[in-house]
Image (cartoon, rainbow, N blue to C red; front, side):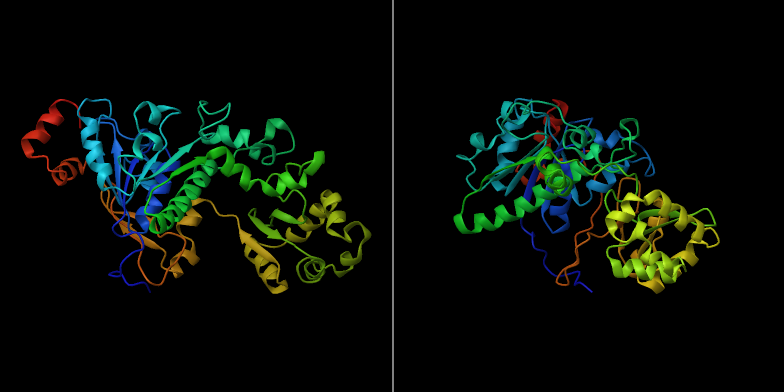
Length: 400
């Protein structure tokens, strides 16, 4: 069990973030998990537009609750005449600036690394964008689904025809970019400890998702056919995917080698002769004859419940899984057994939140509330030596 009082790796690190949607907020939330102070700058009266994506969490947005715990919300109208002096005071004490504003917006606002490095040599500036800071696509707008499309994800997911293509059901391109940004910031902090100077980090959503497409890209090396779309099944390994059982449920299973194929035939299907059937002698043969093999598996599973099929698969040493919906995930026994849930505050009261996936025995991750819009504005400005009268004036003028 981690020591809740133990110091966290990023204690004392301050991150200022111009962020919206998912990629940058997911990056900075992970930094906050590790102890960083994250000051989220939001537009007065409006805030991060992800606050309005839905109202599924007791009136709060599901996206926003997921990616914004443990942060401080500072409202600041960056176009106001007095905003820059506030921002300069923040950046003078900050370690990291993160932004995923619209293409070109950071440069127009004077927030590029080139604009800031002379005044704030310690500052690490991380820019997250759809296509990166150079190239013909630099100024194109980029949303998760568009990047999944440009990066080839949609060519590998869903059914066989173009009409049946399917996006990944979560914001995978945003998540990938947020993870690479967080990892790169951690590396930059280590580097700064050696050089004493900050740096610029350019994270492209397209490049992060193309990195994740490495297997299908190499499978299609030098013009070879790419893996076909196979729905929830594996495109090149079989049997590997969902199979319906007699109680109308589905069981996910996957075979990786010939030893497992033999055990599957004998113990799961109870048809040991299939192990030497020429149609199914190798993985390539099984994949080529997947229609016949799928029929045989469904026939064998027709008299079994999902639990009975999983019991046979476990006995045979075959990898398997339940096909859970979101209710099944909320109530997953493995997550409960490992004590992976915590309670966090929010403007609508206490909410459950999953601990970060990496468990470090030396410290407990930070799990602080999701902020209300502008909740910390007055306190942050007071830290910057603004008195109450000045703060009221800035508020009345629409600067904060």
